[in-house]
Each structure stands twice: as C-alpha cells, then as structure tokens.
Amino acid sequence: MVEGRGRVIAAATDGACSGNPGPGGWGALLRFEDGSVEEFGGFAPATTNNRMELQAALAVLERLQELPRHPDLRLRTDSKYLIDGLSSWMKGWKRKGWKTAAGKPVLNQDLWKALDAARLDDVPLAYVKGHSGDPDNERVDQIAVAFSRGQSPVSTKAGVVKPAAETAVSPADVNEQDPAPPALVRLLSRMELADRLAAGGYSLTPIELAQLVEQPLARLEQKKEAWRWRDWELQPVEEGMRWRLHRGAAGSKQSG
Image (cartoon, rainbow, N blue to C red; front, side):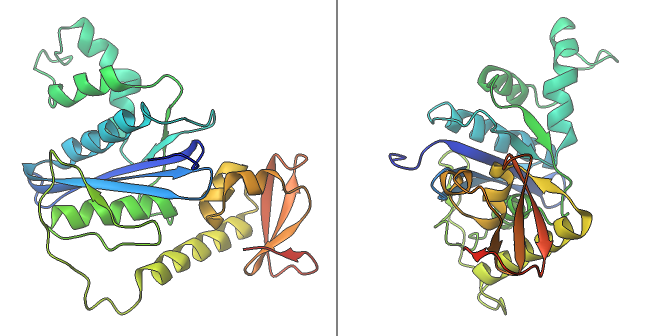
C-alpha cells in the first residue's frame, strides 16, 4: 500500500555477480515524497552482472507503472550497458532482427525485450558513478551484493528488503559481526557526500536534497530561507529552486 506516501521522487538500481558468470543478485529502491523508502531485490543461482543490472531496472520499471511519479523522477544506475542499450543500441538491434552489428544474436534478449515493453517515457535513465559515495547507489549495491552471496541485506530505517518472488532465495542472516550499526554506516556515507558537495560548491535540486537529508520533498519545497542540516548550512539558489551546502556556517535555523 502506498496511500499517503505521495509520488515517487527517486529510484535506483544495481546488480552484482560472484564469478560473472556465477551466483548473482540485484537491488532496487524507491523514495517517496513523504520520506519513506521501498527496497527490494532478488537472487539468481547462475547469471552475469549484466543480467542482474537489467533485471533490477526491469523490476523497478514494472513497479513504477503502479505508482504516482514525480515529473523530475530519474532511474539512477551505474550501468552504462543498461543506459546505452536502451537509449542507443536497441534501435539497431530491432532493425536487424535482434542481431548485433556483427550479425550475432543479441545477448540477454529476453530481458531487453521485457525492458523495451516496460519502459516509461516519463522516467529517463541517469548515470551515477558506482562507489562514488552516492547514498542510493551505495545502498542498492549493498542489497545486490548480499543477495548474490545468498545473504539477507541488512535492514535500515526503510524497513526489511523484500525479496522478489521470482528470483528470491531464503538467505541466512548476515553481518552479525558488523562493528557499526547499518543506520550509522549509512549516515556517515551521507555526511561524507555532503562534505564533498560543500567543498565542490555544487548545488542540488529539492529532489536531490531530499535524498541526501532524508526528509519529505514537500517539507523542503516549503523552505525559502537558509536552514541547517547537522553541520551544514543550506542556502537557497535560484529563488529556492536549488540549494547549496556550506560547511560550518552559523546563524540559520536547525532542521533535521
């Protein structure tokens, strides 16, 4: 049930494989306007990393068909294979009867055809560099890797990760020896990213800021003046259409 959550404002996917080919997993998450998060993923016993990337995107696109979507929604992925396939290569494959330029059958045709049928014109793909500190990319990577190892992804405040029925296994509990609570590890990742954004002078849209500070988009859209999040001051840019972080600034109202 999604009543009361509002529209989906962010989506992210990732795939992982041990051996390539070998046991694989995929992970996905959706963020809603009220700040809630939906996470899910799955496992395949013998697969490739590329298939897991495609499977993750397919699962999200099929889920998004059932949900209200923000007009600025993007599906964020670190897979150039997925992006290039959907945006560039597929037209040529279809003209050639699902053959490559070399005349060979396109790999992973079943998933590409399913993605072509499930694609949403209002949800473009956006590339994010893997392992670069992006919170949502890091999280879906954790989910995918855990499933690829036959393990249960550690829950966060978003709740338990839901296994996809068609690819799920019954993984054992993991990370019992993790020295830091998962919520703290996730917070530190977001704070490290905030430091890099502040140092680089980057500005964020309200949706991007909602992902960083994990606050409802509707609350951020109401803000017009500078305010504080932990050790950073958020200052409006372009009349509040974007926000810029400043480390250690003082004098504004604390929030979150």
